[in-house]
Length: 278
Image 1 (cartoon, rainbow, N blue to C red):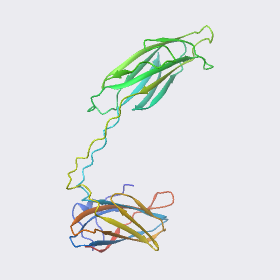
Image 2: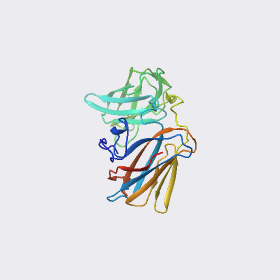
Image 3: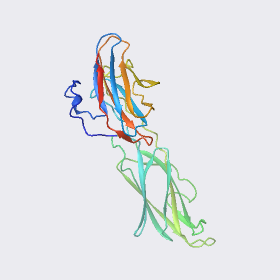
């Protein structure tokens, strides 16, 4: 949970200007080049704390540049008949959704668009459509369209990003099943998934996996490396945290933690107390 930015820590903790903007449930330090260097903290969790959640990040807090994965291509559907409208949004790659409009007999307009897709992805999207005109008792009634015969999935179609495709679907009275009550359209997004973007962080800033952290309270102790979050469940009180490196090189790091109750809601914002800084 985001908390108010920290202005100061305890008077004996000297943090840089960059560190002073961190929230109370986070911190940043540097391990020295001494072999086996260890930083030792205490975190005091009060209130109705059930457990402490702790996460260690190797590297300076503002050094690692994360590139998010390219968003999946997706499309949206709008089904209209006169003043009636139904919309289904965010039909993602490899998924299908149904859109229904209860409009009776007559002509329906199906519009497909790609709003919300990352426009840097130039590949056209691939999809197919299946529709049914149905009576009030869900029996198939008469229907026609340029798509294909109803109840049969259409051939694959493409839709370029930033474009809209429109189709007319006619529903009518059927000799056997009577009047149309609603139109149901099934949309299948058959676009190939877009690969995730590679990280732009330099190798010098990438985590090397050298740092480890141990969180202790009473007889309970848990270790973590990298960015694996750990929960140490032992109620309120002081939790000991040790951060160390088996190598003899100086390493910056930062961390996040929260004192949580049984519902995983913050029980208290707790500053950490630095007892040993190497």
